[in-house]
Length: 107
Image 1 (cartoon, helix red, strand yellow):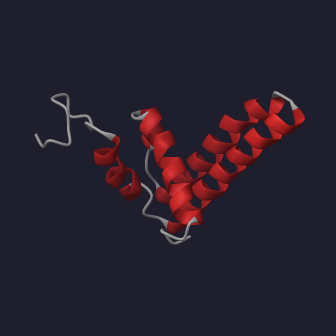
Image 2: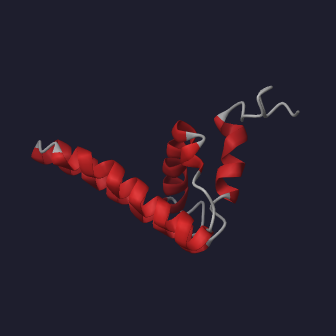
């Protein structure tokens, strides 16, 4: 067992998890779909705040998970990390989004 995993075999930190997350998004189309979905989640949140319409908040998980899961099932052909690591996967989505829009990671 490495220092990056707990005794149960789970990742010990987000930093240890993130390389696994990136590997789970090796397919460029899957990554692009994730970035678009995360951008739509951010837009839905901003619309909820600006319009004070809570329906946009309900749209957020549909947009985010809908796009991500299409990317995984149709292009990446793997099981989304969300099922085993929901919070770290969400954090990974936002990190991937900001790395991409900042130019740190190719789109």
